[in-house]
Image (cartoon, rainbow, N blue to C red):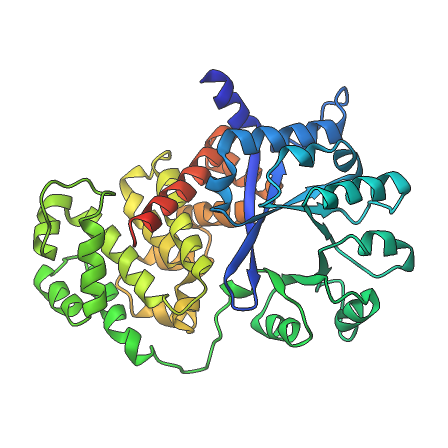
Length: 414
């Protein structure tokens, strides 16, 4: 157990989603680092250490826990590629990303051909067309194009120049819906970036009528005094929500003996704070039912992560507020409205609203921590961790536990 804890402290892994054109999850790119310190032991070979870290992490935490059976994109340097460590990983899930620094030398091409012959999927990262790269292009299944570096007509030219209809193209660093739509229109198949987090704001737009009842439920749930009868009345207007709530509370996730048949009964068994938390989560899942699935997943991961981090600080008595902050961090995207307008209508604490609007405070620090972690900005993670007086070894276990918790919620049909 001591050895496992040490490995957890020395390893960091985050995941970034990759979507298909229907905004469904195709896979995750896993980002690794062996620690947050800005130094490396010069006695060690960095590529060897990198490949060992990669294998240790996947064996320690489990691929399925990180990817839920989806494709797993991993970066390979030249030395890691030539070590053939990829052959120790499942070909059904692995996508081998060849870093842009890798040259199409004979030994590189030979290993890539061996991996292809063994059924592995190859991707070229940060691709810009150069004729000399044709031997690797011929073996590639996926080509990743950075939309921040590649502009205008060149985004389409990459596909034309490569000239192989078998290859799928992945647009990365997509930051807006317009870029996503452009990539779809010119023939890209997969997409990576933060576009799904950005709401399509229409000035003056009100809450859609089919979501209004759900939004009213959120408003009532977050009143300082929770009127159970009123909440029960609002929820019972929505047959789907009533069914989902009762089914979830009666699931194995709660382990409550007997059957719960009403919100009042749930209140007696769970208590006000826990009932608010679970009902907010379920209501938000209904509000976001027409949004990309990963958006809801990310909201819940953030909620659980923020709650558990809060539990390790002086603000542990406000765990529910941290949970709520994480849960609502994408609510503007769910409702396609500006965050400020939504928060003006929700009776939640002023510092939660400030945090969600980007105002620096104790809550915002924790939200920034998970955002930086998601993006693999490890130096920022280290800086915020130090401010919160959190040891490096606490971040990854909380992140992985949050993912596991969401997976458990999903199995319970939230």
